[in-house]
Every structure is written in C-alpha cells, then in structure tokens.
Length: 388
Image (cartoon, rainbow, N blue to C red; front, side):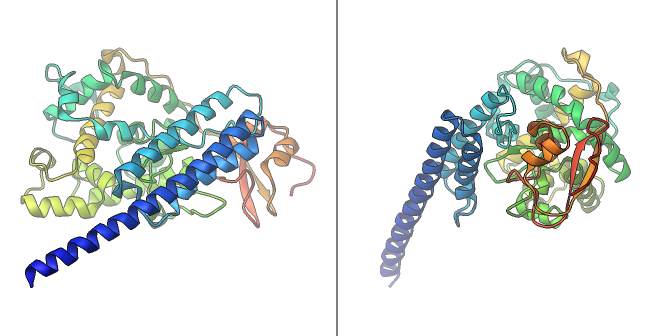
C-alpha cells in the first residue's frame, strides 16, 4: 500500500510539474511578445505604444497565478526583462519629452545584495570598524557582517551603487527625515531606502515590491497605499514614506525596541522572524544570523543597512561626499475628471516629463477616473485661468 501510494504520488507530482512548466512557458512567451512589440515601437519612435507594451510585458508576470519567487526560470526571466526595459528608459532620458522618459522600472539594489554569498563578502572584508563615534541615533550591536558590508560599499563592487544612492538621496532625504521624525522613528533609518531602492520611486524587485520603500502589494495595502489599474501609491514618495515609517514603528514595538529584528521583519515579514525566534530560542539577531535561521537575503539585508547608515554618517571617512538634501516642494491642482497628462502638461506650461516626475504613482499616463489631485513644481507653473 505504501509503495503504491508513493508511486501514485510521484506520478501526480510529475504531472503537476509538467503543468506548471507549461504555464511558465506560456507566461514567458506572452511577456516576451509584448516586450518585442514595445522594442519595435520604441525603434519606430512610438514611445507611448512602447511604454504600453512594456507595461503589459511586466503585468503579464504579475497577474499570473504563479509566484515569481517560486520558480528560478521565471525569476531570472523577470529580472532580465526589467533590466532590458531599464536600458531603454535610460536611453529615453536623453530624448526631449519623448513620452517615455519616466523611469518606471529599475531593478532594486536589494536584488543584488540578496544574492551575495559569504565568500563574496569575505573578498572585501577588512579590519573591524569602530563606529561608536558615528552619532547614529538608534542602538544596534556591531558584528562582523556589518564590517563586511562597509568594505563592500566603500572598497568593493558596491561602491558605485553607494555613490549613486547618495546622489539620488538629495531629492527625498529631507522629506523622509521630516516624516520619520513626525512618526517617532529614528531619522538615521531613512537610509533603509538606499538598500531597498537607491531612493528610486520606480524601483521594482523580482518579488513585486515597488517604490522607494519597496512595499509588496499586501503590505502596501495594509498600510493604506492604494493600488489599482490607474495608480500605485507605493511609488508616491510622500505617502509611501509615511507608510514605511509607520510600519517600522509598528515592528519596533513588536520587538520591544530591537531595531535589528524590526529591520529583519521589514525585509522578510514578522511571521518569518517570529518563527526564527521560536526555533532558535533567541531574540538576538546575530544569533539568528549565525545559526542560519533566516533566509540569506535577510541575513544580508540588516548588516547592509547598518553599513550604509554608518557610511552615510561618516561619508568623508570612507571617501564619499554627502550632498545636501533639499525640501520636496510642490503645488497641487484638483483635476475634476480623468485627463491625459500630456494636455495637462501643456495647460500648466510644463514638460510631460516634469509632470510625470512629480506624480510617479500614475501608471497609465493619465489621471484616474473622477476627481484627482496632481502635483506640479512649486512656484514654477502659473495657475491657469480655469481649473479642470
């Protein structure tokens, strides 16, 4: 009886595997078809069509019933797709108001950090760092992996990513610090955005996380970020920052002020951290780290953030320049009914790219149905004689 059950079960497993393989083939083929159409449209200068087809290619993967994380081939294809689209976006930035110059999809830096092995990090490991004088405004215990990541970002392959993030932070850092302070979260933790997204509202991970703070859809919804066909507030800098601060504070309260555990849970979810604590019998992050109770991504994630905070607070020591941040300022206008962003840009005497840049949550090149509030550059656009 046992033998027959095993054989029957194996047959079912093989059949299920074949079905899943065929489903993945179909998903990739449809996504690739839309990508090729977008590529051709871009070559022909039809940027709106290119954007639409690239969106459909990505959406094909996310509306599928199969989790990207559950299949290596689908995960690799997704990352390659995002990287290919990103190359077109970078090229389009040089086009004058080409209609494709919003950088909607960009790989999250965390995807690379998550894949680093102990051997990769050991290549750039150096002497232990003394960070007591860094004036960091939250407590954590320094351990060897933090030093590995300090050297990775300061001396290794991560230096380019670190430099790019420091430069990009100037736009949103002031906003993040203000909101974190209002929400009672240590302001130095704004550097979590450096690891999550490189401060890019358009960053998107293979797991479907999006925005500066890389909310997955369910957590975004949980903290009040609307997501539908027209808008995705995970890409809204102000709303997503408020949500991130509240989530971090909630996690810190859950773990009795232990920010290393809170950061771990921000990455992998509180359920996984609770399970690791239960299995290990310890609430010490570094014991969970060394014992292998957490996934490799999370084992890398926490020391990477602590390393980035350390570098940002001592930029010159590590050979970096930390540019001054500036306030995130804008004016708002009420739009009474659904309107395309191109005619709105002309009405407000703005470029299409400038309007998109301040409204990254708009997914389809227009406002959603009904009334909507859009942002325009502060003091740059004259108020029209008649509002929509």
